[in-house]
Image (tube, rainbow, N blue to C red; front, side, top):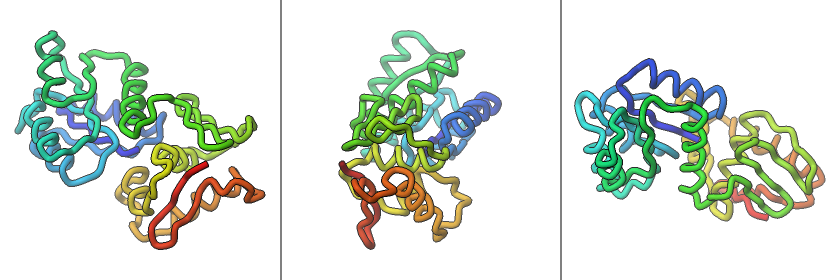
Length: 223
C-alpha cells in the first residue's frame, strides 16, 4: 500500500514512516509542507493520506477541501494536537475519514490505518476469502484449504492488494504505484516475478487458477 504523510514535525513523520515501512511493508512518501503535500496528493495515487492540520504553507483543512473538490476519495486520517469536539467535527465535515489526537498510541494508529485502507476497497472484514484462499490482513497469514502458506513480505503485499481488488483487473503499473518505491525501474519485470512465485506457492498443481493474467491488461483475482 502507498501512503502519503503530510506532517511538518519531521521526527514524528519519520517515526510514523519507519513503522509503516518496517512493520507493515507499506511504500511511504513524506511531505513537510502544506503546498507540497497537496501537490503530491493530487499528482500520485495513494491508499491513505495522513494529514496534520497546522502546516506551513497551507492549512490541513484547506488541503482536505481541495482533495475532495477533485473528487479524490482516498481515505484521510487527520493527526493533530487540536482535539476538541469542534475540531473533530470540522475535520469530519471537510471530508476526513478518521481523526487521531497527538500524542497517540502507535499500535492504535496502525490499526486505524489498516482499517481505513480495507474499507476504502469495500473490505471491512480483516479476513478476505477468495474461494479456498483466506487472507488474514491483521496476522498477515495466508491459508489455502486451511493449510498455511509461507510468503515473503512482498509476495504477501502483492497478494493482499490483488485480493482487496478481487473481481477487478489490476494493471502492472497500478501494482508498481501502490506497492513499490518510486525508485523501482518502471519497466522491470519485478511484478511478473512475484506473480509467478505466488502462483507456485498458492496453487502449485494449477488446480484453482486464483490469479489470472489478462494479456495486455493486468491481473485478476477471483475464486
